Image (cartoon, rainbow, N blue to C red; front, side, top):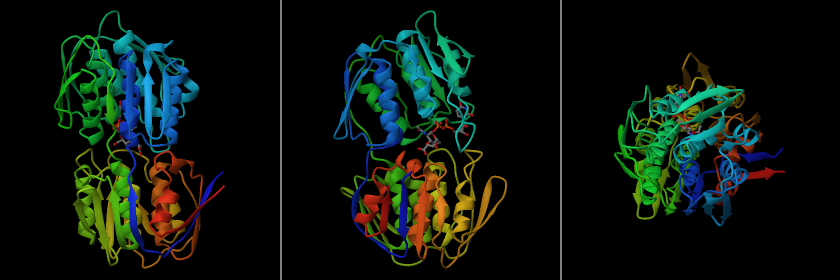
Amino acid sequence: MEKLKITGGQTLHGEISVSGAKNAALPAIFACLLTDEKCVLDNIPALRDVDLALNVLRTMGVICDYQEGKAHINAASLNTRQAPYHLVKTMRASVLALGPLLARFHQATVSLPGGCAIGARPVNMHIDGLRQMGATLKIEHGDIVSKTKKRLRAANIRLPQPTVTGTENLMMAASLADGETVIENAAQEPEIIDLAAFLNKMGAKIRGAGDERIYIMGVDRLRGATHNIIPDRIETGTYLCAATAVGGDIFLKNARLNDLSAVVKKLKAVGAKIQQQQTGIHLLMKNRPRAVSVKTAPHPGFPTDMQAQWMAVCAIADGAAEITENIFENRFMHVPELARMGADLLQHDGFVAVRGVQQLSGARVMATDLRASASLVIAALAAQGMTTIERIYHLDRGYVRMDEKLQTLGAQIERIH
Ligand code: EPZ
């Protein structure tokens, strides 16, 4: 198993490029199932989850060629309507095959994505929405078995709460349905806007993506298209938090401030100077951050995917803060690991009280999930002495070559094979 060895105490200086957004790349890859024409996706990040998504499609007969950040996908050769369990179980975003397969082939079998470290993560809202569009869906032996006698029909779907992949699944299904579907209480993340942009290039008729109400007028067929994936706002936020925690002067090329307004507002509150420039974001941090509380919420609120990283900033900040997680029921597994490094954290039901300490100390810690791993990296960069982080395959799911990018910024970090 690979590990990361980090010696803390360095400030961060220099320029790195932000990669394409994992959570925009994954839905776009599955959206290619909606047409039998060739699609080209650019700025696709070289991540394990992207490999897994392409392998799901390959196993189903789809031609997928990925090189230098470009994915060429052609689903004309699709030879099954079943997404393979052994791959789906390793990546829950495979549930995004459901909407496209149902919409185009009127049947789909996708294994029920299990829960994961951060929570049960049910897909009942995906299923209920597709039922309202005329599909029958049953759970049989761990699979979602779905079919529809004829073309899906438009529906007025009001989501009980914003679900990102739920909104994406329903938007893809509705793009080929008969009539105009309205999704109310839709997720508003930038990745939703990016997926709608790609679908519209394919000939879909979607408006309102990014607002709480999305209108999708179904069309008879979609054609191949080329699309450039947006930059990863969570990768951006992670590096902004790292430089805020340890101090420094960094430039993140391709980063977009507007995708991260809730995070940027908090970073400025703790003392960081942040500016959007022509080709990216500049951050300057000269002193110890002040502690500031956050509550996670659906976009445009403070993203749950930044909660663990924020805790690392508060762990060494001046003062006390409360970090409230409102999206997932078990997204505090970084707490005991941060505590091993000397963080002063008190976990309550749904929130953690953090009292900033002057100095964290390096230790052997273990990554438990993607964003928890990023939190440990930030803490290690700020800690006195050496930290070893184990199970960093979690980190590689969502961050392209984080060790190399941090080395570029002057961190003392190396990957041990
Ligand atoms: C997406 O997951 C992201 N993944 C997650 O990023 C992100 O943390 C999450 O949205 C929240 O922003 C991708 O986009 C691939 P949800 P998703 O449906 O769509 C509950 C990362 O770190 N819910 O928005 O699975 C659910 O349990 C990953 O990159 C239901 O109850 O999340 C959760 O409490 C981790 N029933 C809440 O809604 C449903 O049918 C939000 O989940 C669907 C969701």
